Image (cartoon, rainbow, N blue to C red; front, side, top):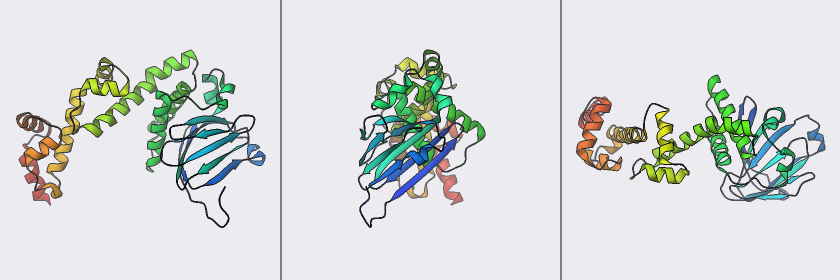
Length: 289
């Protein structure tokens, strides 16, 4: 696929976890093939090929199955014991590969042999699986052993839910990893929109769950939606108050920009959280600079 005398551009970020291997690739136009000589390496993984978004697209070819076009948000399943290839189109096309050993994922799935024939239907578990894989490959820091095991379990559970899991496996995954993934996504949403007016009903509607479900998620962590949102806004205010580049901003301006609508409530909440008034926090930061 690469034009003659043209050097292909490929960026790859890899994260290896127990029982899971993730590759996040950005590529120019080219063909990547896994032919018969590579198949004999004994790799029997089950692999998600996902287009996580961005420009460009690609075609996935798998022996004995139809070729499938992957656009942003699309995904298919491939078996590594079969030869195949991927044709990338565009200057910078994104490609995400998440591989699980067949012995680990296979027993959790029903009618697995039919799955490579078509694109995987969009689903919440697939969305969370993609988000988690992208976040793990975006960071190059080493993970603690307990974290790697936790992420491996979550990814396996989300993968089986995205592939029509058997009843017992689906029940286990929904009660554990899907619940954790929802909470992680909801927290990220709150952090992103903490400055704006954000209600529990709005958040529930955006994530396709009920307000009571979100209350239960935060309750299981010993907090509440209201307290978590307040903490994010207080952290935003504290960061701006102690930032030398924000010295010209008034305390009231910072309070409103952090999502607070009432100054008296902001001052009281700030003192309760940090043990000092906003002006004192700013003065202490100025004294250290």
